[in-house]
Length: 393
Image: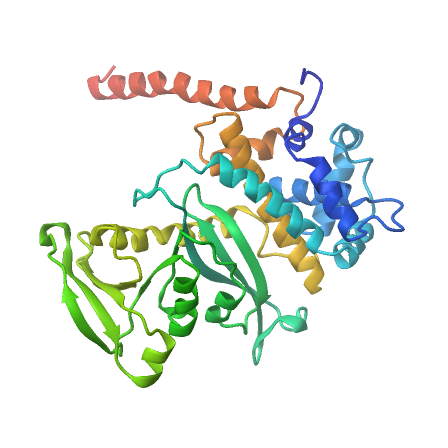
């Protein structure tokens, strides 16, 4: 069925095009468009992400080199880089943000059964942000400090599968804790945050919506102990307390009881103290939930290394947000394909294979099975070479 079609075309077949067109119609994205539709814009930007293009000139050169093969990938042909620049500048970035949410919902359903460090039936989210430095003279709208510009990616990461459930892009000046006001709180899940988000009034809003949170305490944290639960110190739990807050403003911000858990990391020996509003899960689960928050740090590191979100193809706010949302869409699409095709490769390996085989005319699954076959075939050779080296043959 896929004979004669490029890997890129087969990859894009997994996109729900009807949903994409709905997002385009919602914002009149194709109004007065003649040469580059929103869907073609998405394909070109996805091509740039998958092949690690660094600039508009780089994209233009590579696309002209591919020539007629672009048509079989769904792109009518090479276009001037000014056309792509204008599209990124003027087409509403919300088109690609809405479409990314469509892909995120699909990926969330696929990875719902994935496990992580803390075994939980309900959803668990890690909330954090990463800063992308920019040049102030080129990005004046993203002023961060006196001589520096930056944007922040505030991300709510679903720990079941490391899928971003929500991404909010702001200038570097926006403090992390303000994102809690824009967060749609679901009833039931855990929200894991570091100390930057420890605002008692906002945490009480999470508690009031029937959700749970886990965060760390600050050094000046004042409280009154009500009750201490028995703990298993061999597991690293130092204490498990039920507390209330001291101080007029603290108690007014969070008038209910809280759970305070002390934990010693067995690998580093570091002593940590957590604050939570869940009293039913074991104390060790609370500690492991916070430890699982490290997944969002790995997610930020991964997308900065393997997606084009540090060097931008345009300088306007709309162009930056368009590029970031398409990069997130590509990340989620690869995660969907990994699950749909039942691949055991890491996302990094999948991206590397795609980057060198996008315009080969081979079934997409065969591209990955060939890689796996080569890995297996090369192992006996290495063993024989090592054996000969040790025996002197």
